[in-house]
Amino acid sequence: SGYTVWRSYDEPGGFRDQMYQIAKDNPQLVKLVVLGHTYQGREIIALKVTQGAKGQKDGSRPAVLYSSTQHAREWISAETNRRLLNWYLDEWKSNDKEVKDLLKSTELWFLLVANPDGYQYTFDTERLWRKNLRDNDGNGEITRGDGVDPNRNYPEHFAYDEEGSSSQTSSETYRGPSPASEPETQAMMALFDRANPEFQVNYHSFGEWLLYPEGWQIATPSGDDPIYYALSGNLDNPSIEDFEPGLSSDVLYVTNGETTDFAHVSHGTLAWTPELSDGGSGGGFVFPDDEALVQAEFERILPFSTDVAMSAVDPANPVSH
Ligand code: 0X9
Ligand code: ZN
Image 1 (cartoon, rainbow, N blue to C red):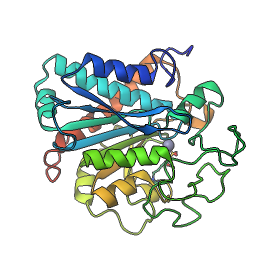
Image 2: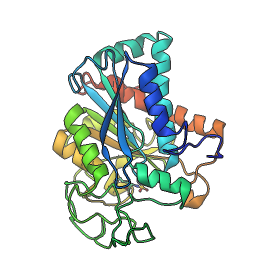
Image 3: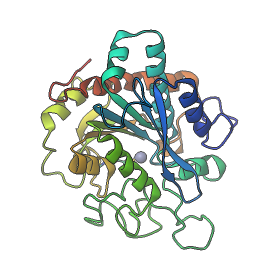
């Protein structure tokens, strides 16, 4: 790719290759599942990490879902999530007792690239592309007005109002023609059915927030707020250093058809949208191609991310670092 840190989806050694390699290198711990295919035919891939991954029925242990790059340009989310996956595998190999116990009791699911077409497009054509690659005008090529926002297409308050998503195909928050019309949405929903996760962490960028549902309204924080509060921390002591925790619709803006709202309402999954750090260019979406800065960002999210995993066996008694 010509980058130090960043890897595209398709390139040799890119995300797709790496996911297959990780599954191959860790047969006891990792199972690869192809959840579906994009408009351009790319595989949408999830990895399950748990002891005896292949023999163990999916969803038979309490599960956590770490997802990233729904929005194509938010490269830092996929890369820090990839590092999280590798961190668990490395800790297992070095006999970290907590991680060993965790992977005997819990399934960790990784959807590193939730929007493979869009992600690849940001490497090949348009660095700041956000949406998927639905050909909205059906002219056979991808142009400016194409694509659906993968984080507005879920069947939870879909199209509830014009503020939280758009009916205009050219909008950056175009919700798509109908709920779950998009292959990326269907793949994520299939993963929810398969794993029925206790928790989801849906990494995005940017803004340094730790957001939770329900994002379609500001009046009422979600019903599980004691657990959300315990795991999110507060302004004085946020669970991710310098990330402001709070109700997504209040702290950021209202959305509808959004992933974590779907997760919470349809599956009872306690779900967060961490908005990672401002990249400093590209309007904030372009994070520097700098190993030390990327690793520091990963280390910043690590304690919260592992707290969530450690809490899955008994969500009512959350573990906080
Ligand atoms: O708009 C989004 O989908 C997310 N922000 S981003 O800048 N990464 O596009 C935030 C979604 C969080 N939910 C709500 N704000 N309701
Ligand atoms: Zn995003």
